[in-house]
Structures are given as structure tokens and as C-alpha cells.
Amino acid sequence: MLDKTLGYILCCQSPALFLAALALLVAYLAGRKHKVRAFFRLLLCILCAAGGVALYFLGIYKEYFTIRDFFLIRTAGWIGLAIAAFFVLLALVRAFFAAADARREQKAAIREENERLAREAQEAAEAAQVEPAPQVPAAPEASPQESVPEAVPEPAAVSAIETPVAESEQPQE
Image (cartoon, rainbow, N blue to C red; front, top):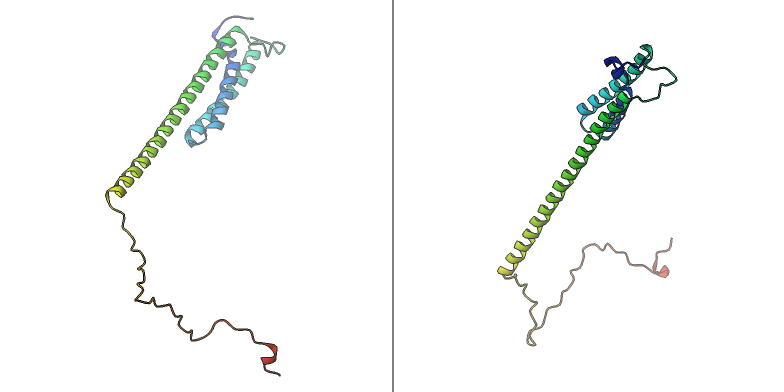
């Protein structure tokens, strides 16, 4: 019953396929920016889940295991799980380092932009020091001999402001 044939080893890989399907589902949900990659991840996730179910039923059909020990993970299954877990961890480490590299590049771009702005501000300050600031002529002081003309308002042709009229002065109707 527990022969170590290729069929037995293959049928024991269904837990690894379920783990791979779960990892692909998480990758699909996390990275839907790239439509083509997301499609293929979802397709591969569905294929892994269907393959896991098919291998379980094939193992029961071939009598490699029974319903009673259906959830028992055999040695070949643990090896498959270890391999699948290795690839999941490898993908997680690569994603972590890719995110760290992206953040490092973002910080460098921000730093360069800040340095450029500081350099421009410094150049503007140096240019302002080199050129004398244009002086605004001060208001001429009136000499005691000259009188300063006062601004006389021009009379408006039509008065827009109505002045209140006392009741006694209003026309009677």
C-alpha cells in the first residue's frame, strides 16, 4: 500500500500545491497593477488548487491513502511542502528587497530635489547680494516755502449714494 512509486510521491504533493495556490492568491491580491501578471497568477492559482484536489482524489483512487488518513501529510508531502515553502520565502525576500530598493531610490530622488532647491535658493541669494537692490524713492519732503497740494475729490456726475431725507422734507402724497 505504501509503495514509493512516482505516482505515490506525486499524489503526496497535494498539500504543496495548496500552499502554492494560497501564495499565488496572495500575490494576485497584492499586485494587481500589472494586468497580465495578475491574470497569469490567478490562472496558476486556480490550476494549483485544482491539481491539489485532483491529486488527493487520485491518491484515494489508487489506494495510496484512505479517507481516514486523508489529512495526514506523508514524508513525500513534507518534502514537497518544504520546497514550496522555500519558493514562497524566496518570493517574499525578493519582494522585500525590491520594496527596499524602491524606497531607497525614492529617498535619493527626494534628496536630489532638496539639494537642487537649496542650490537654486543659494544662487538667488548670491545674485541678490551682487546686484544692489533697487531703492524706492522716498516721498519728497515738502519744503517750508512750497505748500503741498491737497487732493481735491472730483465731484461725481451722478451720486450713487442716497442721502437720507427727513420725514418733514419728504413730499406729501
